[in-house]
Length: 110
Image (cartoon, rainbow, N blue to C red; front, top):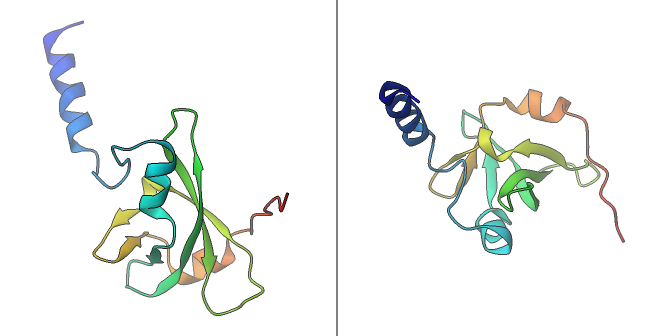
């Protein structure tokens, strides 16, 4: 492999947002997300992270967010890579309307 390609790959890896993948794996990483608030880009609260879905590598891949407001609204799934850490929780580029229009996720209650 050419040195210029290696340098580009290293620079690309270093430019990835730090909040996208926490250093811990498994249950420790899940605790980083569970219970935290998710807001839209304007700061409106969308919901709270109910559950973390780990990827094949053992790191969080998806979070299930329980919307605020309507108690009967089902959870929505958001990719961890699309979240940005802020002071109190996470933000997403989705608007509140886009989040509410997403399909709900059925959770296995077993």
